Length: 274
Image 1 (tube, rainbow, N blue to C red):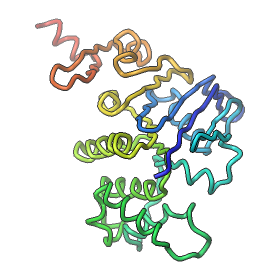
Image 2 (tube, rainbow, N blue to C red):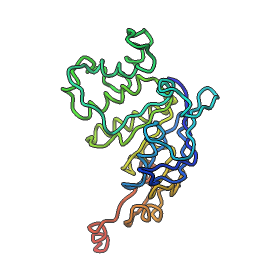
Image 3 (cartoon, helix red, strand yellow):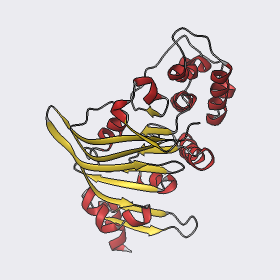
């Protein structure tokens, strides 16, 4: 896969000329997982979509870095951009009448001439993407026979077949059961650690972020509230302020990961009675 990085500086984004994101800077770097976090309406998915060129930028810059060269995202053609950056979005079509392998082959579009047959490089990339996501065992199955978790992995395989250095994911664990959530999180870490991919991901679950993220960007009402490692950002005071309810944090003795707990009414009553 190509090595690439994506850097956004001082982004201002809006809807109908109303700014909703203000002066946000984010770096998605090779071999690391960067998580965008925050409550609903904080602007995290809007930022991710702007990185993927799916949301217009009112002001600021997005730069793609490859092989030591830096190029403004807007200066790249659609195919040039798609050879370096891919997005697994929340809303995806539900195709029928095609196999898993055929869907994954769609990811090779940026590398192919129109109507050209698959090359050996295409087939190698498709096979690799199927194997990385564990979808090779279902490669010949029709996609309309798959479960939601299986289909999520197929769409991720399609992104990986695109063979980019930057992978953006918008809430990839949403609506998945615990097993598939764990598999997606493990795969993100594998892509960063073993393949040097620059992974940028929007997550709702702070526990998921603690499990996979090297860096986190915490957004609050369209502005960056805190940036750093989970240990730096996940403090009770900051999270309580951003999410609007009492929170506690601790380091898990078994895993060494930050654990976050929201103190809703039932939790507070139990603590008071103990």
